[in-house]
Length: 111
Length: 115
Image (cartoon, rainbow over all chains, first blue to last red; front, side, top):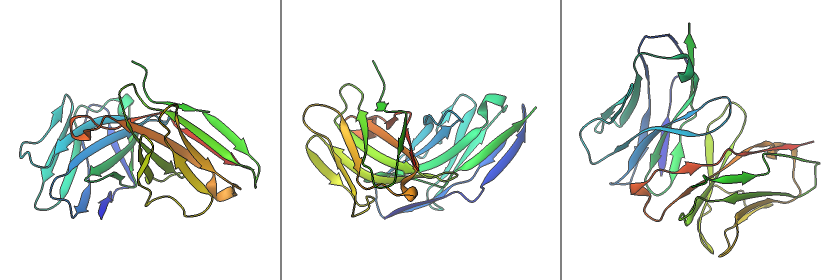
């Protein structure tokens, strides 16, 4: 079984500041992948970043980076230099034998 | 290369009617997943299909719901005798055979409203 927990229903950040979204997970799979997806009001699901569990190096994609702590089963997303366009619902997800999502965190960006 | 196409975008059904949601995966993708998203909630896995095979339907309600992915044509999620609780956004995602090399690509969803 796979579970994903996002303990922050809502977060706010000032434009140009940095924010970290939390995610913890559990899985019985030895080989798995972790993802962060963004869902703006348009409802489109947009892949933000992914991490292979066997890689120790944290993934980065421009202003987005993760802090992957495998022993703690933690996979947080850091957004640097936040922009208004970053406002959305963010979902953490794990893929072992299927993709399972957390409940999501609403990110609000203040100008 | 067109993305994952879902239609219709919006679907309104009266209680007791049938809803048919379609999903055309990206070209070259042979795996399809269906997810349901209730308002203010995350996406819940429903079913995972490959061409002509259901691989995992552990998230699918046992009654009234069915899914298929025929050799030719789109994947279909069918909901019979819809009830108000079926109102949600239904997302389809596709991937090539080895998802480790490619993340899931999502369609824009079908919003089902049951009146």
